[in-house]
Length: 175
Image (cartoon, rainbow, N blue to C red; front, side, top):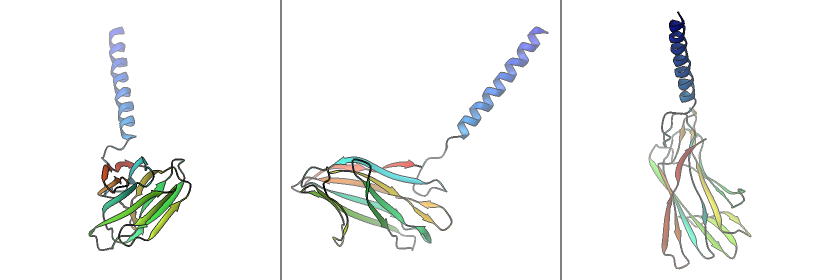
């Protein structure tokens, strides 16, 4: 009789352990984060990146241009203290095609400037900067609630002679 009770307790303990493991496993997303996430709010980030005086960076983005967006993709740049200094909407063409966007970042005389690579328009600036920035690309949100993020994103660093030094891929993440 004592042996039967031990076997029942062991079976019950194994069952409880299996239930606890199943609950713990289901608490974390089991699917990978990717650009066309079904409801998962995926983003790409990079940094901190340190620019030396007279250095520059080119931020390149490749993403599908989602149709019927409720909120466009946004490029957000933060300084070394975590303060947001650039919040740039990246509007797609609305036809579902793939789109690129490039932004120049320059660091001169203690000033950090972000400009559109195509037309040179100043999009954001920060004075008294230490040249450090953190990039975050927030995906677009369609009217259906589905998020559409970047396919690829990188930051290329250039020295004062305009020689490319390093290419930093923006990493996948989720919130």
